[in-house]
Image (cartoon, rainbow, N blue to C red; front, top):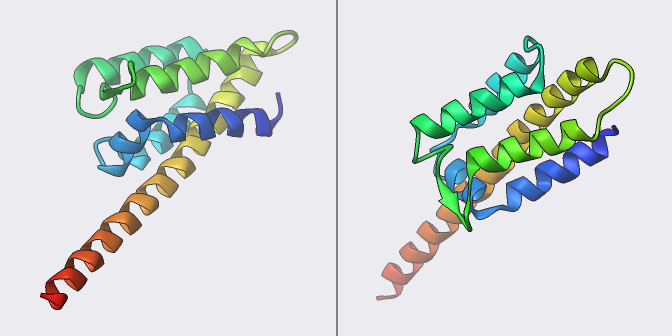
Length: 137
């Protein structure tokens, strides 16, 4: 599997309203994806990581469990992980799946940083506009 395939999946997830809201409002911190990236390197299989995502979603309905358009952040991330893992077969598949998972979570970390920056910029622009309106009055 090439990195572009993983990045395309991450970009689709990053555009989802649940991801944008949870990450942009800091309900799901970008460091959580970095932690998953580190854990992926220690996992024996992607199913172990999928179970961890289920756990995060079950205990937190404001972040990982936040649902928009019928899917939660946890469901989006887990589904993406398992879809990508399902494309990896053949020799050393388990090792290659774990490497893919590490890249996947690393790219999600980057995407979360971009979403957070965009949200911060939006807030700053809204604040400036509000101040400009107040000055005009």
